Image (cartoon, helix red, strand yellow):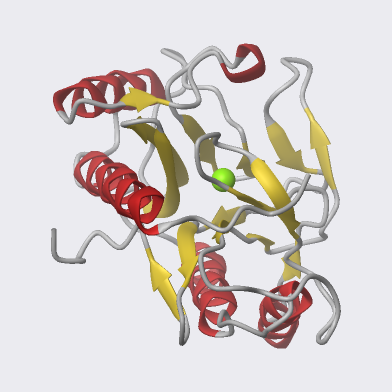
Length: 254
Ligand code: MG
């Protein structure tokens, strides 16, 4: 399946979906505190998304049982919100919000500190954020998809962290997950050439220990094999005529 080049009308809708997801993520993130359960977060995401006239894209996706992924500490991604999952001081928590609005999807995540983080936690979270931004930085027409992964992998290595290889970013549009697959460990100068109008996510999962992961018995929750911390940040990005536009920037003008 070819990678879609979105027209102006589709891009307007992708911008609105991206802004909706980014707004929900920001509002939910501001409410995190010790004692909050990840089931509370799921309820907040459902309410906020409905208030915006959208639908949580993740709900029921391949049977996923919640409206949002909540991935705490050694959980890499796809954590399922639960009543029994109570946030504690010192935790790090990734909240991954995908919103469908007017037939198009916006996908974004951030890792938040709950209370006071350890120096280690602060490091892996900051490196994950910088890796996401380093990937976005190289997006422009004519660049290769491998340039994105290479920029991320080089920064992670320099900072003593590892990059998860089993999961990547993805094209997004009328469906949450579309081609291309966006590896976060690509080779510079390799892979698909980027063209204006392409829209995809960049969402590196960065580990403090080894890159290896495993999936828990619930069939969804991905954790680091060594139990070390993992952090992730995600933006939905449009390739423009001369660079990139982040569609999930919470500070972008409406
Ligand atoms: Mg995604």
